Amino acid sequence: MISERMKELVKGSSAIRAMFEEGKAMAAVYGAENVYDFSLGNPNVPAPERVKQAAEYILEKEDPLMVHGYMSNSGYEDVRRTIAESLNRRFGTDFTADNLLMTVGAAGGLNVILKTLLNPGEEVLTFAPYFGEYDNYVENYGGRLIAIAPDTATFQPDLKALEKAVTPKTKAVIINSPNNPTGVVYSEQTIIALSRLLEQKQRELGTSIYLISDEPYRELAYDGVQVPYLTKYYRNTIVGYSFSKSLSLPGDRIGYLVMPSQLDDFEMVRDGANVAIRILGFVNAPGLAQRIAAMCCEETTDIQYYDTNRELIYNGLKDLGFSCVKPQGAFYLFVKSPVEDEKAFCQAAKKYHLLLVAGSSFGCPGYVRIAYCVARETIENALPAFKKLAEEYGLV
Image (cartoon, rainbow, N blue to C red; front, top):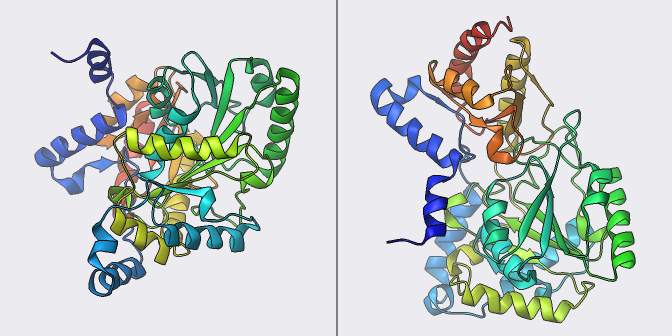
């Protein structure tokens, strides 16, 4: 018999994954072309050609023992050095290989750093709406996740609410920009104000408060919007990055943590993360994926494709009477439900073969998430179904 805790987790298993599985079942009945699955943030755009070329070169030319063998828990030193140098060129930072730890995606990275930092009972703050797995990641290590209610006019972080929420038990704050599920990019003004607030709270409380920046969508920003690089604003910042979206490699599970030398207790944090990646069972990030990432760390997938999708679905839904903040990045719309119970709205959408994810999964009821990282035809064919849904709720 499985543990009592796992029984609870199985019952409350990810609504996003459940919707994805339901979509596959519906496709078997109605045909995939007649089911409009906007549930999962699974990139539809293929990886850049450079990724394939890099993989072929590595497998043909590099020493197989180097590609497939064990390495330092932190990852290949030359890979970490290459990525650090790339970050320095792009963001004006001063990282070395010593500041990076290669991870099994951003999710693996978050678990590694939370394992490193948290004592039982300590608190991690985040801003709703947020990626629902944060709850589990924090609870894995005896911590408590506290979500700050959103300012639904802009979905920028509510810093006044954050100030009230910080206590002597606060160990970290997680932010995610561009944000899943809203697509909002936290502005430089917001980041500066957030940094000043956390510095003030550290002085008042005599503690270290780490800012964990979860950045799988960093490269997916539109209309010239700049995504601030947080280590330049707040010295106790740790960055968790993934190549899943920038290179369309979600299944390859490759990313990294950046732990700047300016961190409080830097050496202990770095060494702790190196132990954590081993004892959590990752041991190290996948070797081949590391080497591909190093050769492709300044490549990006076809962001214009997502931008065109963004305009198509945002304008299409707006014309039908739906309401949402226009996303500046990532590949999601966070649409206000026309009724208070957004789960009932999601159920109604299924009648028209539309698969949406309830905002409750992101700590923000009353909204639904639409992932537009799908084929263009899916959006075009779905708009008549959205029209029927809008008519059912009297929006048009």
